[in-house]
Every structure is written in structure tokens, then in C-alpha cells.
Image (cartoon, rainbow, N blue to C red):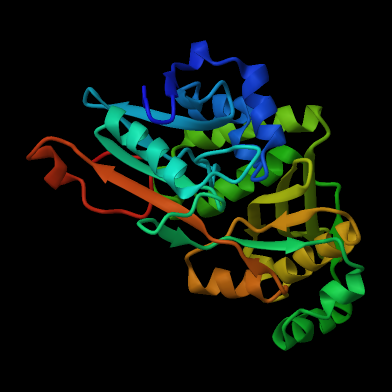
Length: 315
């Protein structure tokens, strides 16, 4: 227990999920990744928590175990976690949570959400686009290069559709991109599929795709919807769609479809310069989040774990 802030540690089975979700729901920095059902699915139930003052602020501790060592790692398809509270947590409270977490686990590599800044933390890129304006105003913020690509679309032509099978969307993404995502196994993709089916039951899953005139798939997007955000969790461009600007068209049509609504399109960001430029081309806003690392592994084990920007695997 952290006596200064009365931060308690709870095992997963001790957490009151109704009060946990109520805290996330009421938080200014509410994110879909922090709800208990999302965490349960993407971690196989391997998460505990730090709780401040009777669920006034909470922090999930997503753990893995290897070679007898339990450590904190960011789950796949879970961009940001960290501290959530109805009021933006002050820096001294953020640091108290981090001290409590690193005091329990000898190795930590996690990503904190955009409302958890501290001077010692590294930043990572995330791009968001508020959709509460008419489409014409949103499109006016596109770069000239993007507008030029979109002007070519009528000559191709491309079809924007919601009629795409979920299994096809998920399998295509895994087949094309699994080798690019470090420390992500087939089990993680399977867990994400389970999550998508759960959100489809809640009518919170959005599937959109682009086809050509021969009904060939060119680009596919898998999004989850929360109260005020659309999370672009998987964006797949098939080889046939790359030279046709299919993904540019897909994102443009998403923006058109949901424009004028009090929603934020969360692109999920990227450290890859080309991907970052793609998101920025739509007039998006950089909303950084934060990387926290702590290594108190005993010598010489700590020497075997080099600094890394990707989480999920030990050694």
C-alpha cells in the first residue's frame, strides 16, 4: 500500500468490476482499453490493479510471466492504459502510481494514456480527429497531396461498403501484418477476434471496406466504438489497393460517414514516419501518450533485456 496516497493493490478477482467500469466511464480520459471486459479478453485475465481512495483513480496492471518472473507488459491491441480518474490526475499522483507499480514488479514496460504526462516519461505518437464539424470543413484541412489522390478515385472507380465479413477482415490483417508486430502471437489475434465478436453483440463494432468494380477487396478497416471515440484498431491495405489509393479513400469515407457527430476518430498513431504522415494528411491532431520503463531485474538477468519500444515479451 502507498500510505501517502492510500493506493491499494488488488488482484483481478478482488476488483469490483461495476465500480471499476464506473470510474472509467466517468473519467475525463476515458478509453475503451481500460474497461474490465477489454482487459479480461486481451490479457486472458492476467491483470491486477492499483486503486486510489475507493476507486477515485485506478490503474490496470497487465502482467505476464516467464521463467518464474512476473512483469508488466502492454497487451496487444491495447495502445494506452495508465491512470484513469474523473479529474485529470496531477503529476505527483501519476508518479505515486508508477512507484507503486515498479515496487511490485521487477520489470515494467507499459504505455500510459495521453492524460498521464510526467517529465521523466518518453512520448509516443497518436493522432486523433474530432468529427464534430461538417465534412466540407474537415476535408478542407486535408493536405494537397491527399486531395490529389482522392480526385483520381472517380476514374478508378472504388466502392465503399459495410458489407464485409468479420472473419475475412481479421484473417486478412493477421496474414498481411503479423510479421510486423513484435511479440504478438496467434493467440493474441484470436483474443482480439473474441473481443470483436463481443463488441458486435453490443453493436459497437464497425467494419468498412473498399472494393473495386470486380468486387476485389482493396482495403479493410476494423473499428470499435465507445461513447465518444472511434478506434481504428486494424487498417489493412491489400496489395491490389496500394497503387489505387484505396486506404486514403477508405479513411476519407469514414470521415464523411461520421462527420458532424460528437465523436473523435482515433487513428491509434504510429512511430513509423510514413504512417504518421498518412494520418496527419487528414488534418488530424497529435495527441501523444507516454512510455514507462523500469528494470529492477537482478544482475545478470537485467543485462539480457535490452531497452525496447515494443512490449509483450521478456528476453
